[in-house]
Image (cartoon, rainbow, N blue to C red):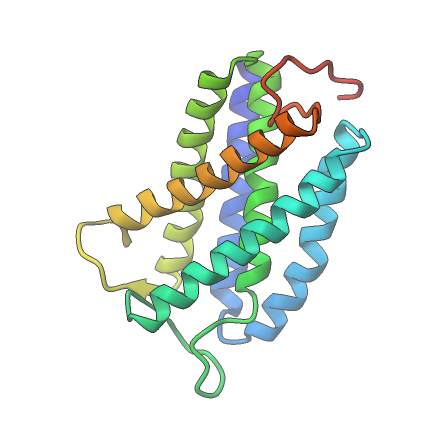
Length: 208
């Protein structure tokens, strides 16, 4: 339980720092994009080295790219319909340059947090893993959004907001990440990939 609490505090503190970083530099989105371009691969590599196995790095890269693509499609839809608006972008741009990296990094952050919880709580069944993924994907990204919104990075035009984040946005974030989660479960099951997060069977950790 202590390990779970430590992992939770670390994940939320890391998201706080990221939200503050984007908030303070959001009017210089090229700089934010370059910083994330260095930070995201570094965190992915650190996550891989915690328990290196042949397919883990592939999962991290594929998950980041898939999440980035789907996230940017959702962003384009929301921005074009005026559901949310980013502030202080250079020129007439509506789409920050750092968004693809932020979405890709979100997958790695969620994977990292879920891995730590699964390991410390010894979660091995699919229903429990899905429940854990739902709770984490509804809370960790929302916390990051709350920080960034209160630093004036963007605002939503939807109503029924929770500290600036609409309940609909929280649900969409959760559904997006759960959909990607389910996709990787199916892929890992189809190709018999043993991964601590995305496998239905228990996986022996080779290195902590």
